[in-house]
Length: 126
Image (cartoon, rainbow, N blue to C red; front, top):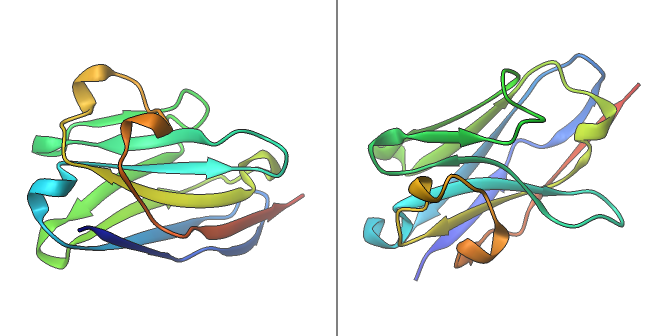
């Protein structure tokens, strides 16, 4: 069983930065792919960034160049560095993991991930 715990959310002004963390426990074979998703009120959950085996990464077009996903295997932690934040980045950010290597699909879809954290709130004010 995989458990995921997000942290690092908060309130910032437009143009600010935040770094989210996702601490994972459980078998590493059960989390070959990890990703960040976000959900704004009244909207569907959307994929933000994915990191697969060999640390291959994939980003949503809306965050490419501003967000960076990374992981520290020794600490069992995945990160999302978010720079130049905008009000439209506001939402509940979720960490997700899956046993399969999802990077090759070249998509970031909630239905591709088996394990989820509880989320951490990010609020960006103008």
